[in-house]
Structure formats: structure tokens, C-alpha cells
Length: 460
Ligand code: NAD
Image (tube, rainbow, N blue to C red; front, side, top):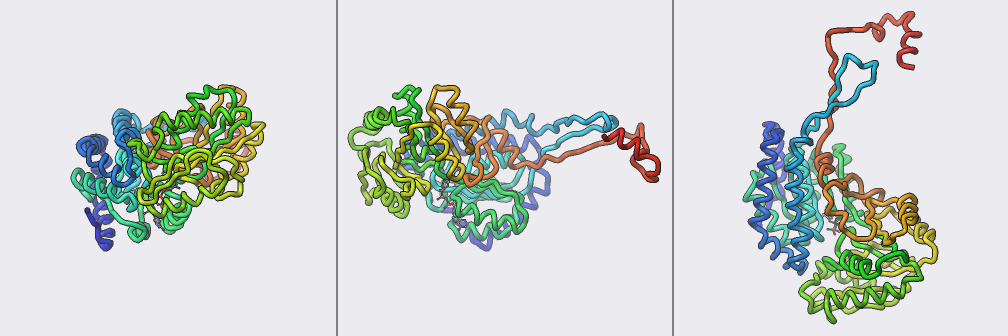
């Protein structure tokens, strides 16, 4: 394990500031080299990453590949577009600015801090790091201490491939995080829960540091009658039960048209067997809960409503079977808190207006899912609800599209990233206006006497 003395944190930041001042990170060729370095590091250490995630979350290798290691495709995307992203862009000027030219220059921010959670502990550190490197920053990374094996691997890889004066990993828990937050950064990128998000924002306010907050919440999943039931069921189950439900954009609860509810439940039951066999505890394809504390929190939800599928638990293994709960009340804790585990409550509606009203009565979610082929219904749900993102007729896949900015709104977060949005998040767009010397109209200079009518004409 690579440990960082708390007293070193100030030195690391100081060294990174010096490194940033050399201007090296502003060179686009340097940035591309570093992105290639990062890709190489991931490819070379693929096996260690798989093993770390297996140790932390019992994460199946296929899931690790799809949801963690596939982040390398974001590196390729950044490399492909970086020359274009970094070019100054011409801005239009109005006719009264005819002697001027205007341009927008993206510039790096400086030294940035990235703090990650435990659920996708590799991807949710590396993905923002790609943006930080692409935009030309130095970065300090603090992975989650709860996924300790993955944190160790990240620390080892980064230390091997990068100068700590450029990219450094600081491992540790709350104490380390707070020590970091006491320092000044040019940006803080945080992924985690709402409560800690508030702590981050409060700490950032001290230095007026801008923040990106990638938070969570309860993402609803509406199921209308106009669907392909088989496809719907599989897509919901996959999005809900990968990583044993510990996914920020997992469908948190289902809002099902009552006409289709019975068929949907039958479908869920059948497809779950296809996915994980008769006893998911024996399936190599089903993850475990990250810690005892998180396990206990989830087991408490099983007291709510009526378990109609699953419900089995094994505390020694931190195993909770893929579970579906019916007859929950909106006041039950399972419908009040973000679930973040393999428990899926079902609520039925008779009219889509009820589903929309329920969503709108709650904090804005990170994701909203709608299964329906009805164009009018799609339009209505898009128009009448607000969420970080929407995915229609699928779940979770929106996160894999580099051209779609990913982030929350309201209680589910602020700011966004992925693809170009990551570059934007870690850049300042500097507006530059240039005048020429071939003309100098005097209408704006004092003395002003007699000029007002002309000024009103020009600017009116
Ligand atoms: P968390 O907020 O408990 O921890 C996140 C990070 O903050 C960790 O690195 C931790 O060490 C640090 N931290 C914890 N307490 C702190 C404190 N008091 N002061 C300073 N730093 C502190 O989150 P978590 O449990 O790791 O992750 C689960 C949450 O993250 C869920 O709410 C989930 O929805 C959300 N999440 C969001 C996204 C997204 O992309 N929007 C992705 C994954 C997870």
C-alpha cells in the first residue's frame, strides 16, 4: 500500500503548483502523451484491477470490464478530439464591433482535486482524471478508502506512470479527505453522496473553488403498456442488479402501469432465473455488498412492503439476493432513501399523470427511465419532468455515450462530464477581444456633449 503522510499533502500541492507554472501541461502533445500513458497503465494492469474489484465487491470480471476498464475508450475519444477542443474558437461580433475580432481560448485551471466513491471505484476516479489531463491540469486523486484494494491499485499504477508533481494519489478516509479540503484547489470534482457533497461545497466556498458534484438519489423507472416486455424486463434487471444494485444510476424503483404489472412481475421472475440461476448466491455473475455497514442498512429495507422475489440474505458473505418488493408505501424508508443495493420496489399507477406527479414531488433524480414506444407519452414525460439524464427503453447505457454530458440537477448534483464535457469542466474559457488600429471612432469618448442622439441611434 502506498501511504501518504498527512503532513505531505501541502508539499504535494506545492510541487504541483510549481509543475503547473512550468507551462508543460499546456502543451497539447504533452497531454496526449500522458493520456496514452494512462491507457497503457490500465491495459498493463488489467488483471490487478480485476482482482482488486473482485476483492472489494466480488465484481464479476465481465462487469469490471464493461463498467470500469472500458474507461480506456474515453481516453481514445479524448486523444482523437483534443487538437480540436484546445483550438481557440472564433466568436461572432455584431456590426458595431466591426473593427474587432473575438476568440474564446480554453485554458487549464491549475491543480485540481478528484474525490471518488467506492461503487465503481476505478472508473469514477479515472474518468474525471481523463478530463483533467486533457484540459491540461495537475491533479490530486483521493479514491474511496472503502474499496481499499482498488484504491491501492490506483495508487500503484499512478505512482508508476506519473510524476507526483503532475498526478498524485492520496489514499485514506475522511480525515485525509478533510485535510485535502482544507487546501486551495482550482477545481474540486466530487462523486459521492449528498451529505458529503454539502461538506465539499462548504469547504470549497472558503477559496471560491468551483465544484462538480456527481451525487445520487432515487432514479425512477416508468413502465408503460406499449413495450416489448421481454426486452424491458432484461434491461431493467441488468441495470438494477449489476454490481448488486450499487450503481448511482440504477433504476431505484419501478412505476408500473397497473395493466401490465402482473406480466412484468412474471417476466422479472423468469429472467432473474435466466441471469443468475435458481440460487443467485451460487452465481459467479452476482456481486456482493461492499461492507457490513452497507449490508445492515439494506437489510433494514426488507422490512418494508412485501417481498415477492428474492429477499434471502447471508451476512457472512454480505449477500443479498436480487429482491423485488411490492405493496410499499411512499413513507417507507425504502421509498424515502436512495436504495443503492439489490432491492427493487414496485409502485403501480393507472394514469401517467400520477407517475409524473410522484416524480415531481421528490428531489430531481440523476436518471429517469421510461419504457414506452408511445411517442406522445415519451414527449410528455420529457417535457413534464426534470432529471440529470433520461434513457428511454433501456437503463444505465446513457453513461457509455461519450457525446452525452453526464451529471445531475438539483439534489442529484451540479456540473457534468464525459467526452467534451469533461474537457469543459476542467477548462476555463477565456474570452479575448482584439481591436485594430486602422480606425478609432470617437463617439464613446468624453466630452459627451451632443453625442447622446447618435449613441441612442447606434446602440438602440
Ligand atoms: P460518500 O459521499 O460517503 O464518499 C465519497 C468520498 O468522500 C470518499 O472518497 C470518502 O472518503 C469521502 N468522504 C466521506 N465522508 C467525508 C467527509 N465527512 N468529509 C470529506 N470527505 C468525505 O459516498 P460513497 O458512499 O462512496 O458513494 C455512494 C454515493 O455516491 C451514493 O449516493 C451514489 O449515488 C453516489 N454516486 C454518484 C455517482 C454519480 O456519478 N453521480 C456515481 C457513483 C456514486
